[in-house]
Length: 493
Image 1 (cartoon, rainbow, N blue to C red):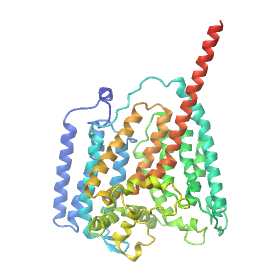
Image 2: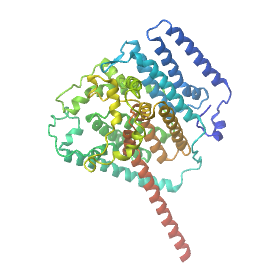
Image 3: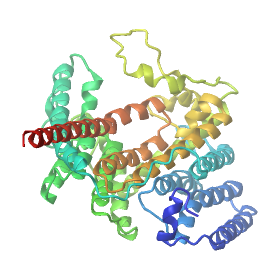
Image 4: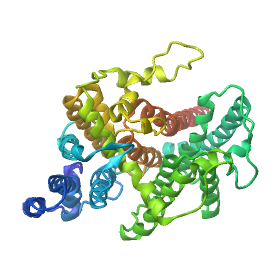
């Protein structure tokens, strides 16, 4: 059962439309339930373990169906979503049950596991329903070779992507000047030079966010063959990575690498072997954990923190992000019993976010973000930066209906993204834009702050969309002028 593959392509893909995958899935569910129930009768937090196993099966079932029907694609959104959900909402909670680590930021979360797992099961079910149902637009399939107009637009787009790199550099230079910072702030402060103590002036965040323009620029340059040769590609990605490490942008590093890797494989029409990804993904996980601990060192210019690497600390720091499980449990126990629903405000706030406070001093603050700390209710919460998963914000907004409707829409949107790309998989513009969107799925899942995700989309994906639109428009105009000149030549003859 392929949930998004066009029916006209099913026979070519050799999909088995029989009942064997469904029966196997049902058998897997029944077997897992039996094992879990047997374990629950005698084990510590047995009910939570039961639900963890069942939620894990629910999360990976779409992947199992694709493997059985030979329609598995590593870059399909359903794959990315399943992996992230499995790590954050199955592996993380089970690891904490196994190690009896049931306290977070001074609050015991033992009683929260069962209701949170029930909520996750509802959220995942609604998301898969949105992904599976045959609703939403179906972009027309295009099996013809790319037109000369697309080839010309690629040439123009390559130049615009190079210009975007320059604009990103100028943006951070302007920010550094206004904020009273040295550019050494972006070059491993505390490692390559002494700490930069100077800080003052006016901090304009939108100039700072220009640092994210490097991500769409890299994706477009790879898609348009603007970075020819491994050296040029590696050098640019390494330079941007150093900048992101310097400012502690862990998730931006992940988005950069994922986007670059996805678009590179899409360009050659291949997929990496899953087994070959185990080692690099494990190293990236440990690297993210190390950076979480070393972030204080870089941000203080070497005045605080340390660059030392400890395997256990890096592993625990990497798993600490999965604590959004516990923070959602606190919110689930508090809203609406002690805190009211936020309503539509979280989803309207992106329309206000872009207005600087010096222009609108009375601009409302995102009050619902404080619900997380208030729900935990311990002194350690201050400065902890606690967050909730995406469906946590849906719950804060509208409760259980918010989870079901929000996740259904999210699943339908992810399905449409895949359909849109599959309609013309050889188009370099679709390759770049799809890779950027697919890379942001990770951040959209683990950070329940819709305004931030909308902001990231505007800085990471929108520039590529604008470059594609401008390049195509210029190519069409050039083609129109060429046709006009040809008509004039024919008329003169």
